[in-house]
Length: 282
Image (cartoon, rainbow, N blue to C red; front, side, top):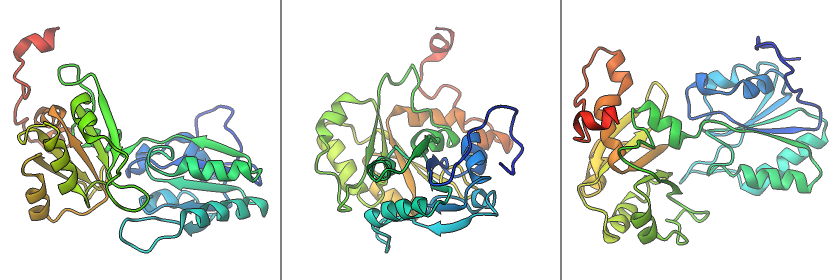
C-alpha cells in the first residue's frame, strides 16, 4: 500500500515481479507524475538514472536504491547489463521501479529496456514523464510552439550510440523543414551541429538557447545565436546536461521569463517578435 497521500481513486498496485518504467521529469521533484509518486511508495527497489534528483528518491525510504546512470564521457554501465539487471530483480519477486529522467521513451532507452523485459516474460507498466525538451524549455520561458513562430518542432539527439553526432540525421532536411529544433545531449558536438545547420541555410543570426540542469535550482540559460553559440558556450563554461533550442521561439524568453518576473524583474521586450497588437488580438 502506498505511503503517500494521493487523491482518492483506484491507484494501480506495483505487484511483485513487475517492473514499472517511469519518467521522473526534467529535474524539479514537483514535476513528477502521481503515478510515479505512487510507485515510489510501493517499490522494493528503485533503479535510477543520473538525472533523478535525491529529493525524489527520498520518497521511497523503504526501497533499495541501485544507481544505473549513463553520462556521456564518463564510465557507465552497459545498457544490456541494466536491462538484464531489471529482469533478474523482477524474477526475484521484487517490485521494481525503473526511474528515468524526463520521459523514458524520449531519448531515454526506455523502449530498449521494455523490449528486453517483455522478451523475458516480465510484466511492465509504462509511466510517461515530462520531457526536458518541453518542460525544461518552459521553465526557461521558451515555448516550443507559438502560433506566431512555428507550426512544426523537431526533437533530435546530439549523439548516437557511439557518442558521435548521429550520421543518420539529415541536417539539411531538418534545417529546411522545421522552424524550431530542440536538441538533446548536444553540448559535446555543438560545433558540428551549428555548422551543419548553417551549411544547410539557417542564418548565423538565428536565436539559440542553451538550458542546463533545467528546472532545478542550478538551472542556467544562455541566449546566443547559431553563429556565436560555440564561442559563447565555451566562454560560459556551461556543463551538461543541457537542452539546446534553435529558432525564433527563443526570442519569447524576453517576455516569458516567468522566473525573472517572480523575482520582480520587468520583461525585456513585451513584443519580441515585432508583431504589434495584431498578433495578440488575432
